[in-house]
Image 1: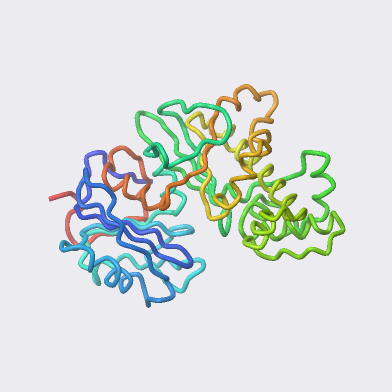
Image 2: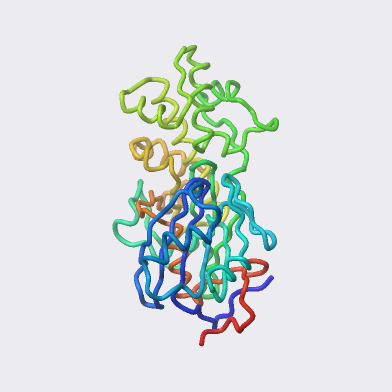
Length: 346
């Protein structure tokens, strides 16, 4: 395993990109003390590949073309050809270097990028839910119910932040309360098990709504996350109960991860579902489930939880890394490509 050398810096400008299944977002970091300069977003389906998207979206926004690109993708980074899970693009760093005149390309996991943003959040970037206070220079955790359930830790050790991505969204999620034990038999299993992502995601939310309707013997059919959140605004009983259970389960899983890594620096919620259910995260059920970790209830009450309000957390995480690479220990093995020249700054 290899890590970025503490003495190494990037050649600027640095292009940072968050590549999702539907949209690609781009920004520039002009130098080590520059703010993140947003360049815009574009639909991946509107371009043949990432190079054509960068030419159209980024190049018109800058007089000086980027020399380094740091890219976040959903999924593992394996080999010189990286297919996207939910889009037709294949990320080929060596081809990007040739197409765009870049000096180097680094490709990271999308929740690794989310973790890189955590130490830099300030003020309105986050909204606290419940009690607790951040312990400075302590491990943090990010959990994001979106299309799936992303998860990553940001460990603090030896005066360095270490992002640790993983597949934590697939941990088991079993019943705890008497109500859970009534609802769980109605939830559709996937692969003979019930993982957290199978409920705590945009794809899982309708699965949970179907189970709630079955449990309550309701004829209500809510088949999309948007239909569920909209119905909850009108106090539809199936939708309301679905989001109450969702928030409670999200609190439970968040608490499990907080205990696992002792996240005294806080647990942060991102993802496309989170901003649509803030009412249910704030009503007490989420936080009560988070803290219900006997014999460690007192410890859990001191760990804060936050909803991330920053509009582009993955981009901001990559930008933080671009500005201060020595502050992070990022595994670079198999994830860094360079033109035929030194990787060190001029």
